[in-house]
Amino acid sequence: MKKFCIGLLAFGIAGLTYSQEVKVEELSEVVIEAVNYKYLNTSDNKEAPVPVKLLERKAAAYDVTTKDYYQDNYDYYTVSFVIPDGKLVAAYGPDGKILRTIEKYNDVPLPDEVRQALQDRFPSWEIVKDVYRIRYEDREGAKKNYKIKLKNGDKTMRVMMSENGEFL
Image 1 (tube, rainbow, N blue to C red):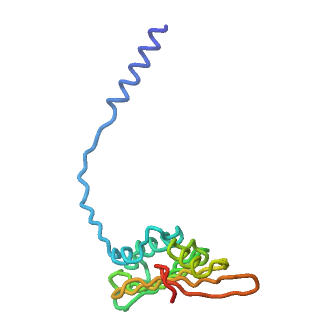
Image 2 (image 1 turned 45 degrees about the vertical axis):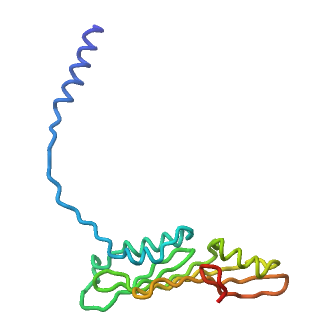
Image 3 (image 1 turned 60 degrees about the vertical axis):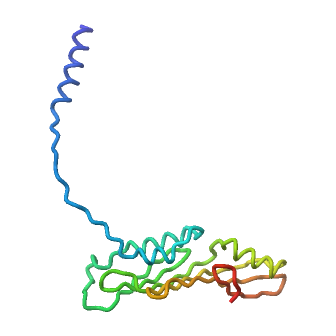
C-alpha cells in the first residue's frame, strides 16, 4: 500500500508538469518619455525632506493629457497637490510639460548650511517655525528660500534665507 501511494503521488506530480502549455507572445515596444525631466533635475535635492520629494515626483509623473477635462486648445492647466505638510500648485502646458510651480512646505528640517548660518549669526535664538518655498519657472529654473521665525525669550524675529545659507 505504501508503494502504491508513493507511486500515485509521483504520477500525479509528473502529470501536472506536462499539463501546462507555455505560450510565447511578442510584446509591443514600450517607449518611456520623460516629459518633466527638466523640472525634476532643477528642483530635486538630495537633502530635501520626504514631503518635498513626494509632491515633486507626483507633479512630475502627473499626465494632464490623459484626463477627461483635457483639450489641447487651452494654454495651460493648473493642478494642485496637497498633503498635510505642504502644497504644490503646478501649471502644465498643452503637451503635459510643467511650465511653472509654486510650492510651500511647513516645518521641514533645515539644510546644514542654513542651520549653521543661523547658529553663527543668532547663537542664542531658537527656531520656532519655518516655511520652505520653491518657485519654478521653465525658463529660469527653481528659486528656493526659507522663511524662518526665531525666538529668544520674549523677542521674536523673522528672517529669509536662500537654500545656501545666505540671508536675504
